[in-house]
Image 1 (cartoon, rainbow, N blue to C red):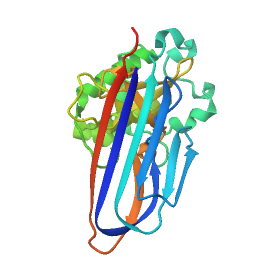
Image 2 (image 1 turned 60 degrees about the vertical axis):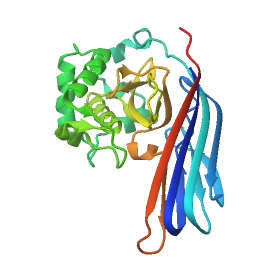
Image 3 (image 1 turned 120 degrees about the horizontal axis):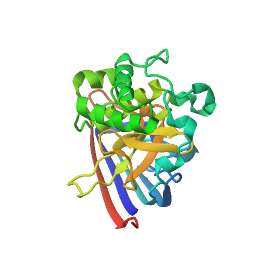
Image 4 (image 1 turned 45 degrees about the vertical axis):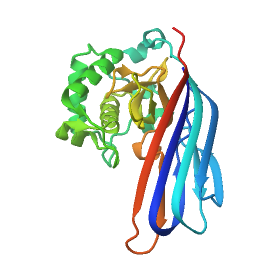
Length: 289
């Protein structure tokens, strides 16, 4: 599938402010099953310094610094991408990865950050461990069966809802509330996968659903590392395994490092800020079947 996206942010301030350093994760990931054809980032006011860097996870992010005061910050990212359908997991998976739990000692050490639990000491949330064990019992210990069963169990326990403000909730809170956004469900799945030895990480991007919605939004899902198949996406707020209509932008072992725009501002007492945003998407060609 080939698509063009325009993602616009308009920040307005009630009084002129000084803009602090900003970080932009808006460049679609040009590797895996996605090819980046074109990308442009427009920022107003003009930054005094603008540069790209490669994040720890391998994605390209942009950093900006500003001089002087401004009563607005406008960011427009225009992208054209082509996505491809990955080969069947069943045909790729190494036999040693097919059975759970995974033997951690046989994994590439580069994956260890994607196995840590959410708690400060690296342990896993007890509620997520219990949920993972429930999915494991219904999967005959097979990793692909486990992932399918886990998505079904999460969707049975948690009602999906949109939540535009705030960081992703920890797994325990999502299960307690029994409701969560796409990023909350993604974090729950990640925590469950890690507790059985499957490396997992957070993904932020776009899902060009059919039929076309009245308003597109950023989406979040999980990627799980399966030896022989590599990183593969799973959407617990969708149908499970992702397809070519998912466009990943940023990935990290931590959800907060994938925020589309992050930064600070300082101004006089009582200054207020407002944000308006819009995502438009046009599908230029569909995947060949």
